[in-house]
Image (cartoon, rainbow, N blue to C red):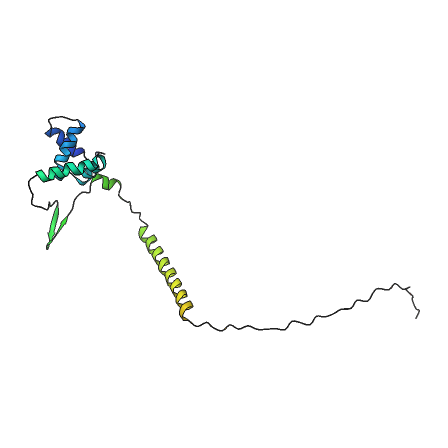
Length: 165
């Protein structure tokens, strides 16, 4: 598999130009056959040539004979009036495609459930704050306790006497 998006088209242009491989000749051949290029090659030309491609492609389109639009059908089957086409994606699309992990469904379901639960709780709280009447709160008032005053008598040193019985 080639890494260059225009590899097949460059090969065709090289054959058409009898082996000439100069950049300008190949570029002019690609611009002349712009309508037949793959989408990856068209994107590459837009990135490398910029506005010069717009001018060259517009001149090539105006000089070309008008065409009737046609639908190319690759491998596929007809179902009613709907044609299911199975095309291979361009190589750059496969290379940069997002790889889905096997646990994506479980985590998606988990986070969706948590999101909707939190959304429900927030909405319920906002509605209750806006629409519900506040409940009266019970407040018990207890008088403070009376302070107990203790009086301490000073210690007196006296002679110890013993009595007989």
